[in-house]
Image (cartoon, rainbow, N blue to C red):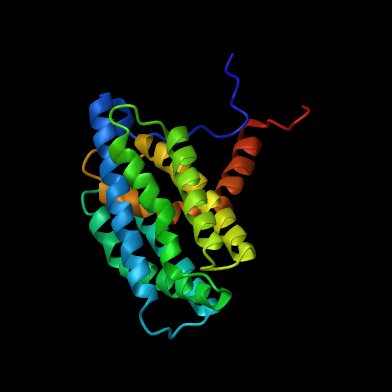
Length: 227
């Protein structure tokens, strides 16, 4: 008798990276982290452009870009040109996020602090050798960010209240980043590192779509049905 899982199983595609050898998976993860770090640098650079979008407009531009990227992935995923089409929307997303990061300066946040977490994750991936652990990545990156932010607060770069806000957001970002990075191994093939990097952004919409998927799964299998 088939007993359906309580929540939908993770999406897997044929020939995904998770089916490759450990060395191949490790290389894919490292390349994805490196490319992601480059996009963070780009977003940070954009945040120093003249600010011409309000917080509301920055959020709307970022969300609309994520929706467009998700539609592209949904419509042509698996096609060789999917990454090319996705790349066309990436500049709009990065610009919106850059303008959003620039808004943090109004709260007393040095914009460059956004790079500490991604940089720590990248350094960990390069120094861990063959012993990469996603849990270890989160722990070590969070520890590095804590030391850096607390050190800056001690030296008066910003107040402790601001340091607390930066750390909470940073911990959340790293938890999401590491979890989604691990999930990408079953949803991407070798050579799709560019698509994987953009997945790390567009998967933010999963907080909206995944609950709907769970509800559909429950209705389909009558998990909550008493009949």
